[in-house]
Length: 319
Image (cartoon, rainbow, N blue to C red; front, side, top):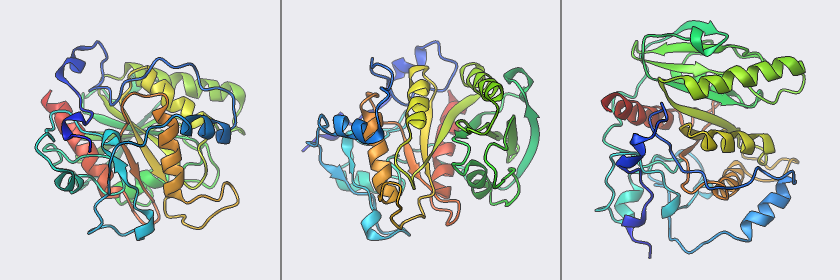
């Protein structure tokens, strides 16, 4: 049995780095760029080298709204333990009750003042320098153009039209700031990978978005949205790898987890695609990044996202 002191945790020394961000959720291993292989080939290569010796901790089931078969067991080394969070005295049973449902995130003492009581659009910016300069902490949402980013943002704040939604992907073309409770920001970033967008426009989006990631001192964490209804996309894996390589704090948010019927595109359930993506990421990162399963249709994961944001935000404000 794996001892609890082996749980990955963030030590104080990591805050002494030159990075302007709160902290790095995980350390990137020295790996080559993602090879141009098919997803199935990548899965086969990674699965052949994965260790399965750690005892999984089941996600608590007493308050879950999803079917029993969708519970994802989590090995101890795959948990995300927030900074300044002590788990050394927890037994596996007690620790499992501290894991946010549908995620690998351990709840910390900083998870307070999580609910949204007010949400207002502030401005759209075409570059980092034009973003609000009031110093409030912020969380950025980014993902492929058809991942359901705006719908998830609306679900988080319980507003149907706070963020612009469209049946046509790629509608967001600026850095859009929404002030929450007059104390922090949600930031809607341009989607990536929309093939119908002009090539030069796609390059501009990528340039100013990455500039925002690297130079925005008030950015607490990037929430990278991944479509859980389909197998992993190479572009998502590359984006996650880039964020890790540049020490940009990141949380994986898996969307469309309400789509439970098997599809022709891979024939896997969302929780299986979530697990597969984690295995692919594991091959490139030393410590598992935090992740959450969500649905803007059923609001699955809404409270978990807010609690996770709260504990990151309150720690950031204190330090």
